[in-house]
Image (cartoon, rainbow, N blue to C red):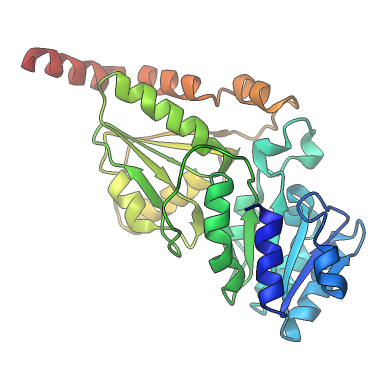
Length: 311
């Protein structure tokens, strides 16, 4: 099943659903034939689309709106905040090509501060699925939740099969005593590769797909912080994203952790094909693993030495 097929199914089963787009039909090219007047294209008018969606929501509708991530989170920010967040209306924001998924686009089309912006809005919920399987497992609950939501749409197909989605819960893939990697969205693929490399080095490595960034799974973060090293991997600015979320949670519970963040530090990425973007910015699984090994050399050497002694 695809994103469009899932949305079509949900909308046909519930007449409250209205599908909207600001001339960004990549995810919903064929849905008009099924929904008729419940499909609305406002043109390149993200702000108008959000205002209209809020009006529909006030009349009992559930608008699922589509736009490029950079424009949905920034150009329409005030409208999302004022028309959806403050009155707590069930607008469902489907954010297209967020983070590194905008690969060949320049800074104007790079949404790498969207998590920070959206999670700061009252009543807004924020999600970042790891791939298409994760996305399809998460969306039914998100669309039927009574508050507004922002979803980093990710339709990449992978071989990984995710566990069922639980509201506000992270997906704990594995627990590790030496290193635990926390990530979300597209970079789950690279984090999983990095974890496998680290395991081959004899380390005890955990991996957590955060998937829900607001509400966030505080217990999963606290458990991960027990590892010798906590690693965050995200295609977002360092400020306001997962690194900041973890800092907030640890401070809230008066604890701390050794943290190595992988994020963009106040710079946009160089436009290119996605594999080149990952390589250029140091976000391939191999690069992540190598940096972790270099950062935690002393602890890792101690671990390996202990294993060799026991053998």
